[in-house]
Image 1 (cartoon, rainbow, N blue to C red):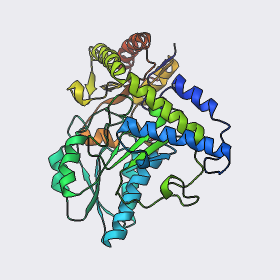
Image 2 (image 1 turned 90 degrees about the vertical axis):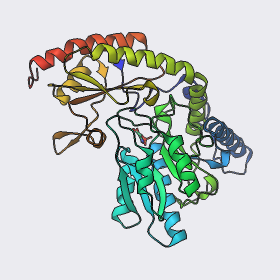
Image 3 (image 1 turned 120 degrees about the horizontal axis):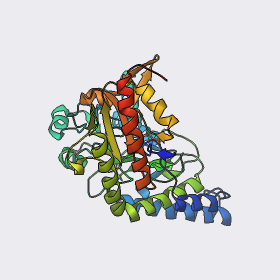
Image 4 (image 1 turned 30 degrees about the vertical axis):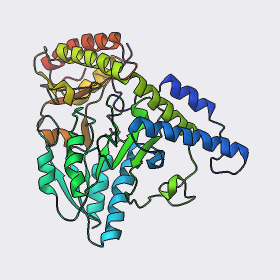
Length: 383
Ligand code: PLP
């Protein structure tokens, strides 16, 4: 049995992305003046144009990064520091309580060193923020709001376009971590009035180690990396040509297939959830409305089962999943997302990707339908 249901952590590279990666492995330096360098530069700029078109940005607004973490850090620190420099007052930052650590920890770090004052906006039991609650936290010094497009654990989709439309007349930029969203949601920074965005290739079929930030024109950003001045000086460092070409290829394939994929993944994730929630003590979390949750995510709470044991037994069965719990000092505790949403029980995230098959889902249903009651019958038994 080999079933991979942890695509939210890292998905399978798409064939198009693999092929392009190999093609450009021996690329010259894209900043070099010689012909080979110029050929490389053409590959990079073409990739930038394709990424920009797919996301509703101009090529100039796309900055290639090492992944989602770097793109989030660039947006948060870069925008806050630029606001501090321009206004000479301490900028105010609002983030949602369910942000990934790439946003949350960057925001807390900025606040701890006195570079920003920070407010967290809570979420409902479905994991979604409320736009009015964000607006209620705005102050004259608010320099940035950061709310993720979709949550990595629950798959909850936030009302980003509505939030951005409310912030735009007030001149407050919105950064959105779209890392989990790109695989299945049509994200468009122009249509949705998004000021900054973070994306990560390995969540939608590119290899690990590449992603991009979108930083809209006229949005001042202080660079985190200084050096050769690549990417309009916002992100210095020799271009990772093969990875950049590969992330563009993966995004093209994602956009081309997305509508069909969403239909298929909704069918598969609903089948998975419908079967597993017939078991005693198993609940599905996240929004009930299917248009408010990612087609790729099934998040369950399971009563009377130890999370660590469940994960180990599933792994032994060849079913890769995620517990969605943070382990600190040897104790397994509920993640900040589950605490914010008030979700109890042992968490289990099953996340599907572009290559998930009907057979994978049937196998997972069979395995979990036997395992969960068996573990519930013997709580605390490890063998
Ligand atoms: N943001 C979200 C919502 C994520 O799920 C992740 C990765 O799990 C990240 C950011 C970090 O992305 P990366 O692994 O590319 O640094």
